[in-house]
Image (cartoon, rainbow, N blue to C red; front, side, top):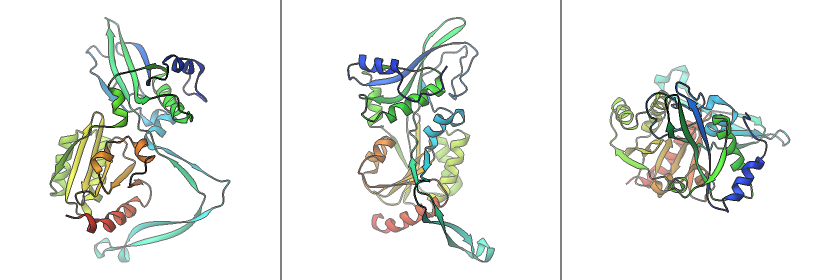
Amino acid sequence: MKKSFRSIPGNIKNNIRKVNDKPFVIYSVVKARIGSHFPNLPGLVIGTEPIADFETLPDPSGGTWARRNVQGWDITLKDQPKYTKSFSHESPNFGDWSRGSHTVTVDREVYPHILFPGHGSAIKVHELKRDDTHVTVGLELDRIFDSVPADTRELLFALNVFQESVGSSAVRSTDEPIQNYIGSLQIDWEILPVGEREEVIRQIHNRLKPNPEEARIIDERMDLLLSLRPKDLITGSSGFARYVGARYGDELVAFENIRYGNALYIMFSDWERLSGMSRLDLINSEEKFERIVHRMGWEMTAKSIIREYKPRYWG
């Protein structure tokens, strides 16, 4: 069983040609014994009860491709000259947080990096057939490819995420409505009033039903968003995806998808439409927004942007 591919396999290329330029999906059909489980696909356990359709994000600890799918990755360009980069963090005044804080900035010489965002692809699970000892399960990636792109890197990445997590992969054409999911997510947004921190967290947990890791992200991120005194709060969901954020005016919104939890998005207009775009489509678009990756100093960057624009949007 191959865990990954260096290039698009020949059988995959042949299957793509057979679909005659129709949309296609990466999938696999697996027959598993009752009592078995899939360690790289959280939530998929072959039990005695029927498996309801659901989506699962490949476990980032399951391998290189699953980790990159969630966290993204970067490449250090050591063949290029270093440049000066400033790093900032908050420090207490005179060593005492009760006396306030100030920003400390340190300059360092670093190599340039290229950052690749995670795709955040999930795997859809469907039970197809069951007998006394085995269950046949259909698995498919939640990404639809309209045709073979001239640059096949995205297709190869998707194949590797699926292959690493499932152990086998194929492609087939599809005319199902799932095709619409890729281009536009219908997010069910809710507006919540700003209140005491603990009550806010409780309400968001009740609405989104987060797992422990998602709950940790919510608690951590909401502390920053609340510190900037939002007009109101927002939560939303669409299938497996879950969103949380804050509005600082009718159009100034900061939010993130806690399914991935690796970047904060700040929108300046038409935020409901933009939040419905897939991450890759949004990043590759010419829309106006800020994407702040959760790395050292991200809090100061987010605070600076929101504080700069908040007076213009407050209404």
